[in-house]
Amino acid sequence: METCKLEKRGKLFILTLTGEDEHRLNPTRIDAIRSALNQIRSDSSSLSGSVLITTAHGKFFSNGYDLAWAGSSPEKIRLMSSKLGELVVDLISFPMPTVAAITGHACAAGMIFALCHDYIVMRKDRGFLYMSEMDIGLKIPAWFMAVISCKIGDARVQRDVVLKARKLTAKQAVESGIIDVALDSAEETVKGAVELGETLVKKGWNGQVYGENRKELYRKVIDKLGVDETRDDVKNVAIAISKM
Amino acid sequence: MCSLEKRGNLFILTLTGQSVEHRLNPHLITSIIAALSQAKAQSSRGSALVTVSHGKFFCNGIDLDWVNAVARSNQEAQQHFDHLYHSLKRLVLAFISLPMPTVAAVNGHVAAAGVVLALCHDYVIMRRDRGVLYMSELDKGIGIPEVFMALFRAKISGSTRRDILLRGLKIKGEEALKMGIAEAVHDGEEGVTDAGTEMGDELAKRKWDGEVYVEIRKGLYPELCGMLGMTSNVTATPKL
Image 1 (cartoon, each protein chain N blue to C red):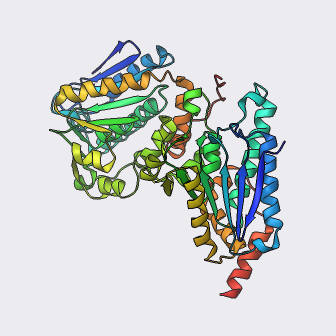
Image 2: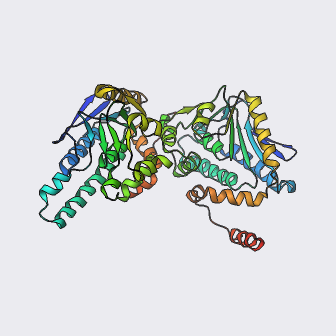
Image 3: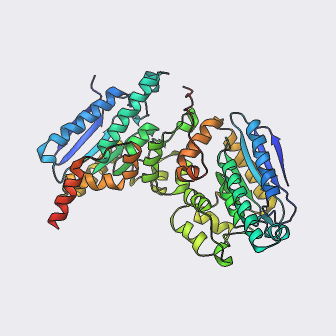
C-alpha cells in the first residue's frame, strides 16, 4: 500500500503523505518516507539549488506514532522510536532546504516530524500543532525536547507547547515564532510552500554544505540521538578550509 | 510559616512566615518543603497547586536578619549564608519535582530569592496595581548562584532574562506581562489570589497524570534538573 508519493517539479522535490488517514508514523510509513529521501539524494540533479517540500493529503499532516500498532509491545515502541530518530537525522542532514506544507493536524511525533523542516507553512483555516503527550499520559523523550528547544526559542512558548499541551492554530504558531507563514487553505499552503521553495532554489546553494551546516545548527538533536561522527566530516571541513 | 489547604483537587499553599516580607530562612523553607511533600503524598490525577501570600510582599528574598542574628563572626555569617542557599536549592528541587502544575499568585513585591521562588512555579500571575519584581543582586553587589541562573535560563528567554538579571529593573505587573514573565495581571490582592486559584482549577481540569507531568517538566528543563540531581524515570503507559 502506497503511503507517500514523490514528485519532481523542476528543482523542487515534493513528498506527499497520501491517503485520508492520520498518516501515523509506523515503521512502514517511516521506511517509505526515508526511501523517498534516499531517492532524492541519489538524483544527481539534486546536488545544488534543490528544495524538498513535504506535505500531506486529508485532515492530518501526521497524528504521531502508531500507538495502536505498537500496542504495549516494548520492541515495537522502540522500533518506531529508533526509525523516527533515523528519519529525523535524515532530515537534519538533508542536502537541501526543506519546507513543510502543513495542511492538517500535526500532533506529537507528527509535530516533531514537521518541526524538523527548515521552514513551515501552514493553513490557517483548520488544523493544529499539538504536543499531545501530556494529555495522553506519555513521557516526551529527551530528543523530542531537543528538537523543541532548537526550533522553538522562547521558554514560555516551549512551556505552553510541552507542559500545557497547547493546541496552536497556524496564526498562533506564527505569533509564537514556531512557523513562518499562515495561509488560507490547503491549496494556498502548498502554493505558498512552492513559492518559498522557488526563492530558495534561486540561491543555488551547495546541498552538501547546506546539510552539514544544518547538522551543526541542530547539533543538540544529533547528539541526543547518539549519532556518531563520520570521518568524512573532518575531510569536508579540511576541503572547505583549503578553498578559503 | 506556611499553611497548606486542599480545596477539591487544588492545593493552596499560603506563605505566612514571621516577617511581613515573608523572607526565606531555613524555618520557612523547611516548612514549605514539608507542605509540598504533603501535597505530593495526597496528590492524584488532576491535582494542582497555587502559592499565595498576603500583604505588601509575596517574598522579599532571603532573611538576612536571620543570618546576622545567628552569626557570631563574618565566617559564621558566610556559613549560614551558604546553608541558606543549599536550603533554597532544595526548595527549588521540591517545586520542580512536584507532580502537578503549579501557579504563583504574586500579590506584591517579589525580590531576589523571592523571584527564584516565583519562577519555581510553572505559571506566574502578578498584581497590576502594586508590587514589583526585582532581582536586586546586581544593585546589592551579590552574585547569583549557578543553579538559580539555570532556573532563569530554563524559564525566561533572551533579552528579558538580560533585563531582569543585568539591568536591575524593578518590573511592575503590566511590564512583566509584556516581557513574558507573568501570564496575567489582576488588580488587588484578592484579584490575583482568585485568578491564581482559577488558573489552578483550570489546569486541574485537564486531569493530567502527575508522574508524567513531572517527567515532561524534567525533559523541558534538562540543565536545571541535571544540576538539581534529578534523574529520569520509566515511561508511563498511554491511555488510548
